[in-house]
Length: 335
Image 1 (cartoon, helix red, strand yellow):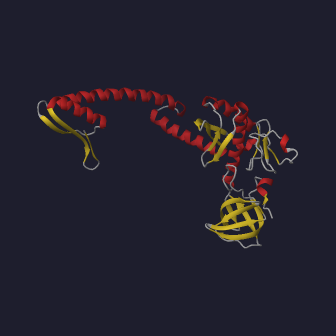
Image 2 (cartoon, helix red, strand yellow; image 1 turned 180 degrees about the horizontal axis):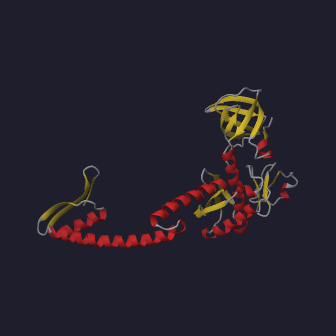
Image 3 (cartoon, helix red, strand yellow; image 1 turned 30 degrees about the horizontal axis):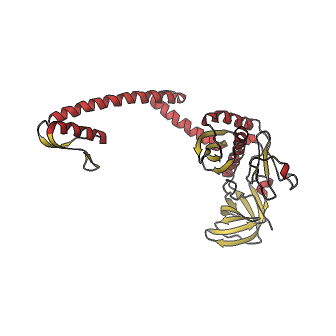
């Protein structure tokens, strides 16, 4: 008996009640199979749902043939009917990421003819791999188009075409897939075969933020975030920019210019320090003129300074020079 997949019928459903068909001990808990479930199993780049069944913690969810297997922290009685509750916040975050990824992949497929070759939703960001080059300078325009799809609040169309209808469905990255094939369409932006859970309309995604596009295995790897994950990231960036702005005495949006100016000033100061240090080295070396072999301790030098001071003393002393810099507790560098 196949498990009824309530997460496909209503991806927003958080609570349900189901009958326990079986409960078997496993390495890290108990494997429970129900007659129906809201728990999505790991698959398609989307992590498994967690939550509770009959007050027992569900640690993981996997698909096994037509069954959905719940790895529980404790046993449940076969034949009993138990209430279920999924952890909604992480599930909804994944729905936002997954639907946002479809929009971005659809745009890139249309613009560059690239196909998605890898997809992973992490706790802080989503990573997508493509089989073609996506120029990083194009990201702002791609991001703008993706967010226009969000602002239009487009209802998603999700269905399983009949074996006769499927060949005529123009889904992205079309491959020979065994029937039934579940199709997820975001009208005007993407149509793709997918087993994951999605939002009902694009407005639920909230925001799509593209972080970067870098070369990866002959193609490109894009990092992005959607919805609450994107908001968390932008809030963290704003916090750090505000802290840096206080140090530079400028507004957060001017931190980049202030940092460039500070970096130029610092480079000039470092050049000045190096020139003064070399003058000091020459004066120190004169104190050892004609003394043959010399052992000298000088605090606060890096490896370059140690070597340069040793060279200066060697030229003056007429013998062997050894220069040490450091402390007894932290050790010494020497030349």
